[in-house]
Every structure is written in structure tokens, then in C-alpha cells.
Length: 272
Image (cartoon, rainbow, N blue to C red):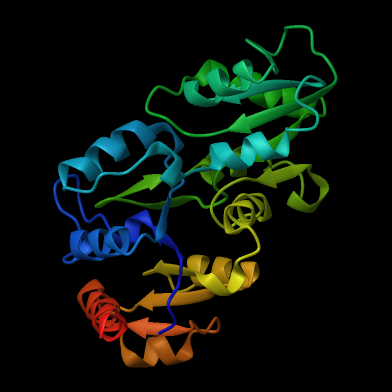
């Protein structure tokens, strides 16, 4: 394997539950830190960044907030050149409201409030989501607002659970008309906007970066879209499943332990 300078990790490829990481997570991250590599962690869990940081630190992994990349970065990039010319109604996430208000956006409190410029509904899911928010969002969309979703999936794994994603509510919002006729942008990990965020972190060092994940499709596909190499951790996947995947990774390892052994072996060779 090449000697990469930048490593992107899918967080779900590292964390099993609130209390356990995959075996050899600590060894891999500590080794990369020792080697002065840049390490970033990708997640759609925008509202949990601070708790994710604390969680990783409880596992012995010291992580800076700017190492955790979320759709918030993509949202800020998307509105960077029109921040003061739009009105935003944000469903669910107080963090998006706070961050976009700081940037100077006009944040709508309800669908009856007077708007300025183009109107956008940003849809995320939280445990505090209220039906009034959904009704206001639906009203704005019916009046021509553009829809931004963090994740188009109906549900997805978060740690050891399967939870609803913003795509489930988005499907309700868009059920009356074809998706192709709607103004929808997705800001999550697989989106073009998240790819733009990662490209800025690369600083044109495409040959020096690698994406590491258990995901056959999403993260291998992201790496290939960015033009960087990919590592697939096959885990419990069968050899047939690995061979049949359309997006072929640059490297495959059965586990983080095998990946660690490769990194450690390369370090020993370079030290000789």
C-alpha cells in the first residue's frame, strides 16, 4: 500500500456502540498520529459532533472538532456566496439554526413570517422534532421553497441502531409530485456538496489521500468520485460479495487489525 498523507475514515467503520470501538481502532489512529498523518472522520450526525468528540476521547482517541466532517460544512459552503440573500426555515436542528444565524442568514421562525430573497427548507431529524415544524416546512415548500436534506435515505444505522433519516420525512413532503420536478439538494456524505468540502481538505493532494470504510457503495464511491484511493474493510462480507461489488476499492482488508498490520509493516520498512 502507498504511503498516504491524508486519511478519511467513515465513523461507523470505527464505532460499534456507545461503549466500544472496532478492534484495533485505537492502534490505527495512534499509529497515523505518530506518523504525522492528517486524519478526518466523516459522519452525517451533525447534531452529535461534540458528543462524538467526547465519545472518541473516552476510547482514548484525542480528536479535534475540525477533524469531524459533517453536512454542516457542506451547508455553509452551499450558502457561502449568498448567505444574506436567502431565508432559511430549518427543521429539527438547533445547531444549523445557530451556525447559519451567525453567518448572517435570515432564519424563519414560522411559515407566516415575512421572507427575504430565495426561501429554503433545511430538513434534518432530531429527537426534539415537532409537528408544527413539519407543517410550516410543508407550507413553505408548497409556496415554492427549495428543499435541502441531510440524507436522502429513509433510515440508516447509527451506532448499533437503525434510525429514521431525513429522507423519510422528505418522502412525505414530496409525495404529491415527482422528485425530478422539485428543487432538492442533498448535503450528506455522498453528495456533491460534501465532496466539495473534502476536495478543499485535499489541497490537490489526490495521490496522497485515501478513504477507509466498511461501506461497499457510499464511501468507496465517494473516494472514487474525488479521484482518491480507497480501502474497503470487508468484515463479515463474503468473498463473493466483495468480488461482485461494482465500485472496486483500491485495497481490501478483512479488518482494522489487518489494515494496522499493513501500516505497521510499512513503518518498519521505512525505519530500516
